[in-house]
Length: 159
Image 1 (cartoon, helix red, strand yellow):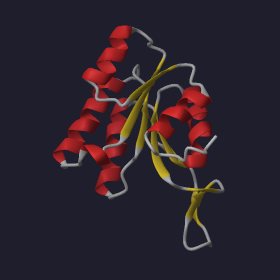
Image 2 (cartoon, rainbow, N blue to C red; image 1 turned 30 degrees about the vertical axis):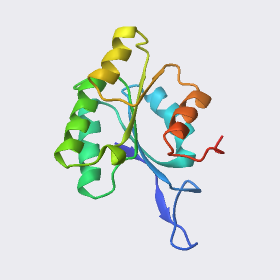
Image 3 (cartoon, one colour; image 1 turned 180 degrees about the vertical axis):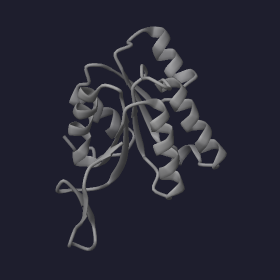
């Protein structure tokens, strides 16, 4: 897992990451380093990005964050990954939220990000996987930010 350096800001004890005020905790799960870099470059201005390269690591990081009472609000999950695919990982994440009695309102927003743009994959992501949104690759900045904005995780004025 790769996390970006976090430092304590001097203004009212706010925490900053790479010069930006942290407002959202974001988990990016993708086995392709280029996809992780793209997602992080788009999302880092809006929160703390934590990267993992497979579904098993995603579930582990998600559970560890819950254990520390610092849950992820946004998860960007690739579908095709080694060890555990994105569908299985999201199902495990949703099961963990349910077992901890996390309300639907407080569940993480999950955006599936994948090159699989088939109807079957899209239906499976929503029906079986429990994702909130689906974006095909290549990821477009405007489309991703629109999805995140629609779930209230960033300001409507964020660009």
